[in-house]
Length: 465
Image (cartoon, rainbow, N blue to C red; front, side, top):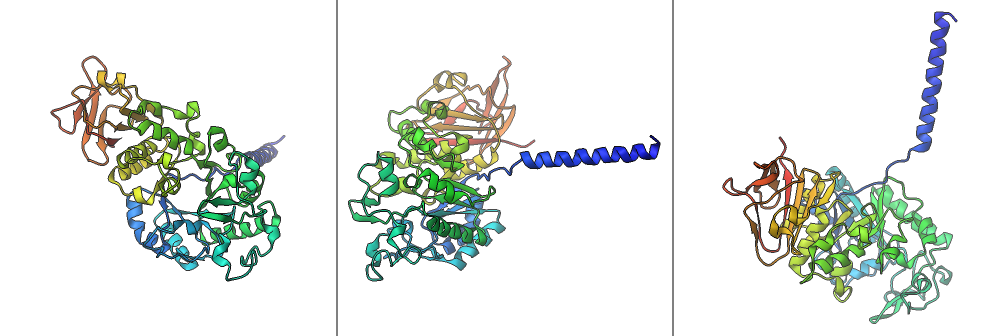
């Protein structure tokens, strides 16, 4: 074969191999599922108000905003832009038209566009299990003709309240009722193609406006088979998760085949036990290992959300005010999970510091440091230390008194100085004469060790060289 033919043959082989490799890559690679860092939950906030708050939200370190359901719901007796008294009306859909109590379609579009300009994404809360209580519409038309999208009885399950929440068939097919609402919420037959089509059209409209993800309300009340059909139109670059108030670990994980993430109420229960008087913070070391938390890749995490905030429900998961801040500091200090921070907590100085810490520690490994490795008195039920790689450290003291030691080892962090994100002081780590690493500066060059005030959380990030 002459030189010219050898070159042509070589080019042909290279081209074929390159094309084959491209095909193989195309067949075997998928777009990575969308991820969120820390979500600001703009609970029951009007869209125009959230737009005005964007500079503050951005400055606090949030890069996702979750809004309350934007569709049409019953008219409220309060001013939705200044009051949260009738917040639950937002979870009773009347129609999927984007003209609700929280703002118009244009208000929502303005928020989405303004958020995107600042690098913030928007998650919409959607309610597909049920429609609004019919008592709001008795003067409009007979049931179910009052509902523009679902005017036929065949679109609803039989009008029967859930009696046994341990019975999955009842939970998924009967109506949600309460002592104050014995008529209940008309339960949609989400197995019907027509119902799924209308829900798909609504989600597509939101995505066309620029919505970046979804929270799905009350997923326990919809069968897994129906949920799979409902979410099938969502592209992989959208962030979405399900609200699953699991009674146990297995019930929470039941919905992971459908949703990339679910709400981690298992962790809320674990946090409540640890931060209650007499609880032990050491019980928060790797809770996933004992199924006391949902695995991090599958979890949206929080110390409280709007369900546990609301008066008269989930009182067993409500925290003392100071405990709430410390529990949220734990959520933000650990590697696992996508933190969700409720409106009312989002601008607390400790939580803002934790949000910024979480953002800066993305991708760093995690290690719960045993207190005995730090100082003799540091192995305590009131103290927790979480190292993030060799670049960050969270310390939580839930005791009512200061923890103070004049000498403290710090074996996991790199040599150098670290800035505390809330109180803005410096901690430095260096080798001692025995070859071990110690804290040789805590705020002042004149002291080493650790001094952390009562009921306090600190977040340290290594200074750049």
